[in-house]
Image (cartoon, rainbow, N blue to C red):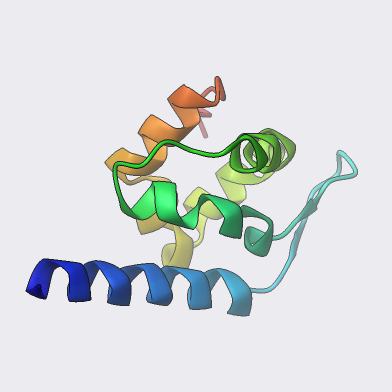
Length: 97
């Protein structure tokens, strides 16, 4: 029961963080917005597989990942073991920033 509650709290916190962080512009024409990855929040916070929508959005946001990794508020989510599993499942290479 306690694990489920903490998991829910972490998922909610991650979603709120993604919603409140400002957009980060990228020269390649992609608007970097962590809110675009909200469809991935359950996969990032658990061992559930990513949805097709999550993979699509993750591929779209790939040019933004270095910016997210540089952001102290986002780094812990983007660099987590589950996030790396999601990226691997979606065939998205982890960037070397």
